[in-house]
Image 1 (cartoon, rainbow, N blue to C red):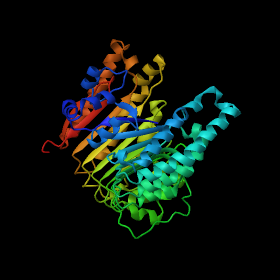
Image 2: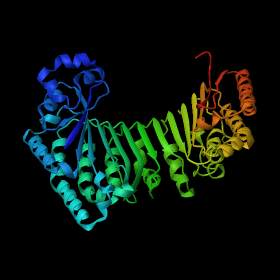
Image 3: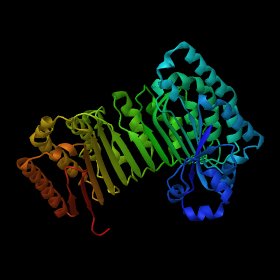
Image 4: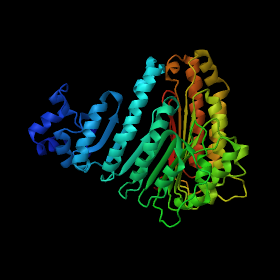
Length: 475
């Protein structure tokens, strides 16, 4: 078992070194690391030492360490058992000063070619059973005595390592449930995990101390009969629900009436746009229930529903306190799809039916578009100088017109990023003049927008992210 320790923020290297005895400094620094280099790069350098070593214990007492990452793998199985035995004899004293704890189950050896052999599979299965039977039980007893603030549960590739994760789940679930129930925990993150029992997420949602919950790329099981205890006071203020590439009933689970009561105090929400018809109603039910919501960030992908499916359901003007609105549109293919599909859904949010009132409380709007253009030189030139740029400006003009419906808006930022810097270096004089004309057209539009009552400024560079930004001069 190894641990990686990050020095506490807010203190200078010299201050830390003056408070630590020289013999402890010599023990902390790895043999292969030059001491002079380490002292000069102490702000960013990660130490690696043994969990049972003296410098870890002494450094924790001096609050030099902020994070501790414990890694289990089959090559250090005996050392892991020895370290946990020592920790158990000390009643968790060595971990008493730790505030962020990362538990990593290293399945790197599964990527080897021999992983497919039956003998190797039986060997790894025995190692997994050993961890599940002994070490997790020890960790569960130890970590209940630690005053943690952040709990992060994640895997690197659930599809590849799913079999081994399922074998560990009977031990991971009670461990995380016990950590979520601690009153000192403020942040819980479930990331890139498949088949997560909804009871585990429910333990985090219903906590009386957690301020922030992140559920990212997670497939949930057992959410059909989910119920919540109504006798608690929710404290959750920041919520992130993003879609998974695995089949998941995430929106449906969180839109249950008994679950929505947990979101009564949420003021910041990051959520993925629905990509199927049956997800629209649960998606909007979650958003609409957050009457205290002040900041909304929506991730839009080209697979999201077109505007015709969203326009009849989603009404952001019904959120009375919404002040900040952000959309992130991503595409790994041709950028035209990114604009036609992704921005079409964004316009629905900005331009509700004419019968609906504007949102006078809205103060900030941000649009970020990320797309990767193919490497075909001729295709890129035809794309840039053909129909894409004129269509793109028309889409942006429509977006700005939708923004203009909200009189209280004070800040607008449109950030477009296309990975095409390599080909732009090969443009000739004619193409460069063409790009200059496009820039002049956008500048003219921004001046018209400024004449309507807002100060306008524009920064445009085809090789870097394109930024359109204007602010109220009186703010």
